[in-house]
Amino acid sequence: MLSDTSIELRSVKPSLTMRLVKWIISRRKPVFPHDAADLQPYLDSRKPPQDVPMPANFEQKFIVEQWEAEGQKLVTLHPKSGPTEWHMLYFHGGGFVLPMFKEHWPLAEELVRQAGVSITLPLYNVVPENHYSAADKLADAAFAKLAADHHPEKIVINGDSAGGHMALSLALRLAKAGGPQPGKLVLFAPWLDMTMADDAMREVEPHDIMLKIATLRSCGAIWADDRDPASAECSPLYAAPEELAKLPPTRIFTGRHDLFIIDSRTFTHKLRDAGVDAKLYEYEGAPHVYMAVTPTREAKDTFALVRQFLGDG
Image (cartoon, rainbow, N blue to C red; front, side, top):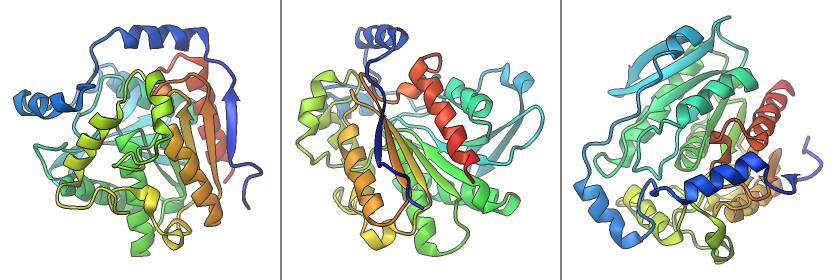
């Protein structure tokens, strides 16, 4: 049964903590260049990308499993009480070009604690040092392993930004294959269109302290490689209605000072039109992947909503 409304504004103004964090972020060096012309020189000159290691104290906080698939690393975290009813497969963001950030570890920690899940994090190989297919193969292998060990209908796929794209693309591949399916899909500020085609984003861009349209298009072209960035394979915003109809119940979370809010709205309506139980939660003034700022009111509300979503069935 479809939820009553497709889009809900959860906060009408940003919390004081969120405003402070945005001010701090706006004065830091961006994680990758804001000017698209600087992106390729940055990638050409950087050292081999390395994931930020898992905090050492996680061994005391959680049951930790470190394993490999397709020659790449994964980390699984369970509460000390043991595996939970729901298992989350979570893909980190970073424009497909950046490895695991230090901010992703506390985000994973709070998803375990506040959303009440066990969580597996694939530390996938990024582009351009690696081909996009390496990350896709890891995603497929990770789900297959989890589905063999855990009831597939109790697996929720999630990810932020480019990781949200990976989560959605995996869900679409699984639906097309017709094998075991995840029970639910959660997307944190997902990147849905590699081409950033909707001009409405230009109204949001001055408020987005992290993302720039031209740079994202360049990252998207690198990820697409030999594919058309505007194809449904690269940009799930354009997936056919009959493919979208196969997706599980879906919840999307995005800040209103995030370029991806525009496509998140469009995609939510497309899901609803295809008959999917889908809902978008928006947060006024919140930046890109605001839930990674875990102490904020907005992040805590998001974790509570994820827990509620999983508790619904």
